[in-house]
Image (cartoon, rainbow, N blue to C red):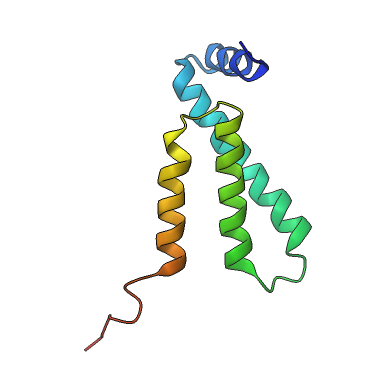
Length: 97
């Protein structure tokens, strides 16, 4: 048992749900906090909005998995999604009209 397992258990008791759902909710809150902290700390001028935002999400997901708030397969799926967003393979092939 780690302190994060106890945190998930107490939060699950608070909201009246199971431990897995409480872990997902806590991970979501942690990711939102990481987005706010990293956006304010790194991107003060507002020049690199997209890259900083995606990096904030990635760091939040990785730390949530390290803290055992979410299963370990979630960062791998998120990495695939972030790579797909950054590469944007359909951007040049789309035509309108």
